[in-house]
Image 1: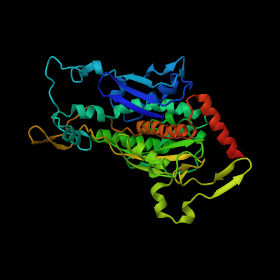
Image 2: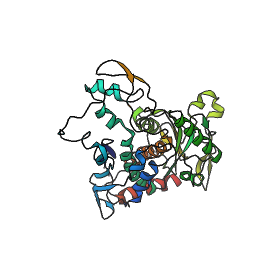
Image 3: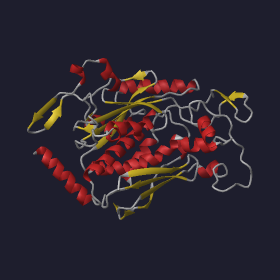
Image 4: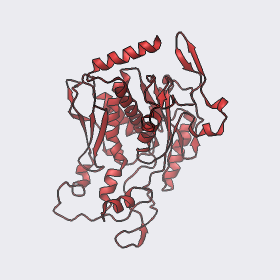
Amino acid sequence: MALTYRTAGESHGPALFAVVEGLPAGLELVPDDIDVDLARRQLGYGRGGRMKIERDRVQVKTGLRHGRTIGSPLTMEIPNLDFPNWAQDRMAVWAPESEVEPITLPRPGHADLAGMMKYGTDDLRPILERASARETAARVAAGGVFKALLRRYGTEIRSHVVEIGPVSVPRRDDLELAGFDGVDDSPVRCLDPDASARMRQAIKEAGQSHDTLGGVFEVWAFGVVPGLGSHVTGDSRLDARIGAAFMGIQAIKGVELGAGFELGRIPGSRAHDEIFHSAERGYFRRTNRSGGIEGGMTHGEPVVVRAVMKPISTLSRPLASVDVATKEARSAFKERADICAVPAAAVVGEAMLAYVLAQALVEKFGGDSIRELDESVDRYLAALRG
């Protein structure tokens, strides 16, 4: 069975859910494998009031016994603490006793209007509830499981913010795992202290102007097994799958691997990563402009993904819109929202990269149990060391 996941639930419904299928039996998990990243997703300067309410913790419902997967679907629940506060009628499963007034003022940049046209509804509440980035809490829960699987085979995933609004840091391809130590201590998850302070100031100024900011983050995967993915078909290329996974994150509008678009501006003599070999390291590169992937396959260097997040589409000073009920010009609907969520999006990016890499690992090595998977990976790596 292929390793897959699905999420369910609405932003202000009773709970969010993640179901992971295809996990080999015997994978050891502890609550912190999931809860630590759920807490990290809630951090970041510029987050809104919702994060002061929620205390995301996972409740595993199926697929786990005594801290080990059993081969059946792993079901995880994350309760929405905001549901009993004000949403019980708005998001009631059955028809409420009193009528709930529809929301008819779609927000530019959000799924509101397109979703209303697609599903034929005169109320944008059902659209915004599922389109909300609150859904990513369930993805991060699934990502914690994928990270635990990858960690067993030496893969560690980290992220950092490289740009918020007008503030950016230079691109690097020489970061090491230890270089990410303390990144979560920065309010914006930036490794450069000076840039971190300027990013925070930019977010503060945007909030004072009733505006929002987007930015760019990077996700790095260290110790990735070489040979994941394939060159054989377009949809089996790992970079294609990574791009799809990242573009599926709410508000992501662009993805690069390695040097990305910069590769189109430099000659081939500077664009490609030359190959070297030593008895200690085997094959290696001194640069990593390819972002760890050539021909759709991992080659042993870190996998590096960069993604751009547009500004939050809910503004405290709403943009112009049209009331879909009356067709009159009005200001867009306003609901509690963040000023900037790029630091949180980076944590979601970690989960998405973990998913693609874990799925490719299970595809290549198979096995219904962790023991089988261990044996297959060990044989393969021994053959590569040859």
